[in-house]
Image (cartoon, rainbow, N blue to C red):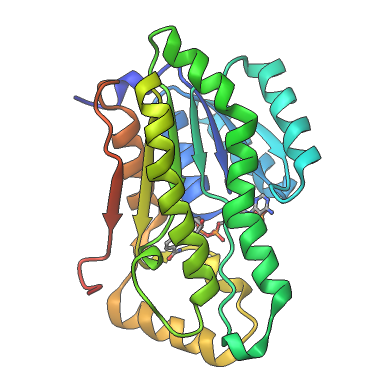
Length: 253
Ligand code: NDP
């Protein structure tokens, strides 16, 4: 089975300004899905939308901050107005801000929780009725959450980030019990080291160097590797749900 049956689907991808979200949006569009691109940096979204359109696809740039409920509500209204019902949602927006717990960085803790967990919930709330309606009419319907291998491992300085991802992994599994019986697939993707902008927001030079060292030693996945996986899981026959996929660089233990 190829990715052909993505044609005609209507997707929302958060975090589409860079990294996995941008790569996923481009790949879904290249297989015929209409894709709404969500993130805060409008210029990035416009550039990607223009590229997708130039390549013959359909994309809509929608500036949104997932930590702002009103912003998500306005974005969802616009997407439904321009594209109609959404049947594929990818939650890729996220931030990773490691620091020793002793640093007491409540600002970073709040930002990670509000983006990686509550932000995902805001998006799910905005589009769950669409997904359920699509499934009720016999169409494939997908919710894809990008969690992390960090949901399963303990690593100093990454406690709060890991906690947001562990919560997201648990959320995905629990949502299957509510959405699965109504034919909405829930897929939790748990990548390892991937070459994106994620580490660029770390404000601790020692931890930046540590992460750089891991990249050099292990060799990361690319955003396209993860996008390929997302296109694969969302293009299976509608009764097939890969519910949890851990994807690591081969050299990452
Ligand atoms: P990037 O930093 O490249 O992508 C994150 C995206 O999220 C950006 O496009 C950013 O755009 C967007 N974003 C951040 N905050 C908000 C917000 N408040 N509202 C809307 N959009 C927001 O990193 P990745 O592609 O790596 O990250 C994608 C997901 O993958 C994240 O959830 C991350 O935790 C997870 N992950 C990453 C791994 C890695 O090694 N890279 C490994 C495992 C999981 P903008 O700033 O314009 O809003």
